[in-house]
Amino acid sequence: MKDLKHIQEKLRAFYYSTLVPVNLIENGKSIYSLPENIYYLDTLIKDAYHLENLLTVSMAGEFSQVKSYYYRNHFEECFILLHVEGYTHIIAGPFLNEKIYEGYINSLIRLNKLPIKIKGKLIPYYENLLVLDTNRCYYCGKLLESLFGHLVAPDYAAEHTESRLSISDEYFAEMVKNRESLFHHPPYFLEQELLSKIKSGNLKETMLVLTEINSLKRTRLSKEPLRSVKNSLICSVTLFTRAAIEGGVMPEAAFTLSDAIILEIEDMNNMPQLMQYEYAAAEQYVKIVQDLSKSKYSNVIQQAISYIYKNLTGKLTLKEIAAAIYVHPNYLSTLFKKEVGSNLPDYIMKTRIDESKYYIRYTNTNISDIAIFYQFCNQSYFTQAFKRVVGLTPNQYRMKYNQQNE
Image (cartoon, rainbow, N blue to C red; front, side):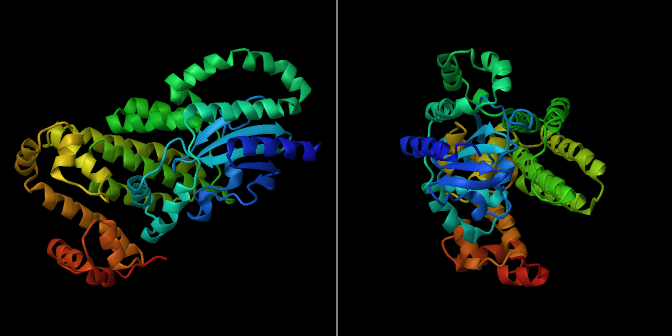
């Protein structure tokens, strides 16, 4: 690389001014970073992403040589990405746009079916990430452009710089302040659009947005192409499941569909078939959301159930749930018993037990850790409640299926 020493000096100026970790990448490998060892989430969550995957993030899968790009992944980590020259890139981050609390970490573990024991590592990881609001993030990107703009290839700069940079910084800053979504790279924005369409049960719009997303370059999640597509589709199914649940679908129904679809994905070995199956999977999620519109539950109860699911590993009280959906606690309690057929505390306990089955059946997680994760006061109480609902103790349930993963 030309003038590496000069580039390193500029990176030091950026890092010590912003405190945002920064990594200089050449041919997909880190050649200089500040701090010397940057911790990424893939050190804790296997295959969460790889450094080279971040280099594929842009409007059309290729980096602009004059603009930095903002990227926020599904784990709420944020990055600023800049193409310097040739096969050289700068990755600034990870950082956060807002502080991550324990409730989010619990949800991340549940929705991605991660080992419960990883929580002890995720909490300090997120606590140590720098938090930048949208404006500071924007100006960090502009600072990188200012520091490294002189490295843009002359021909490219002559052709594109005027059209790309003619709009004033003040205009961009105001747009960022008022519509943060415009600052996200298009794939992220489109993903949010897709999940919104699934959540609302709009099949036509879901298919249109998914087609637009698939016209872009798909992130590589494995060195083996078929495995990469499968991993990508499984990630999509996780997001579809979350959208359906937020749309009011019962968690058990959403996860049952998820398990069936993932099994189908794993059985496929034909690339075109896999690519087409994503549309079929999305359609199935839209249809279960549409079926919900015919549900016997009122809108109030659907909102309550959705809130319970999203906060299942936190402290849940009647007063808190009622406040979240803007109804009186007494009204919610009476209506819930009438429509669901059980009182609210019993429903919460049963839902927690139903979801805990995954960790009992498929992992080696200690029963006591599972009990604490799902807000049971101790293992003894969890065991009693589990047996009352399932008919077996947690250990008996685990032995029955004998399907344990690391």
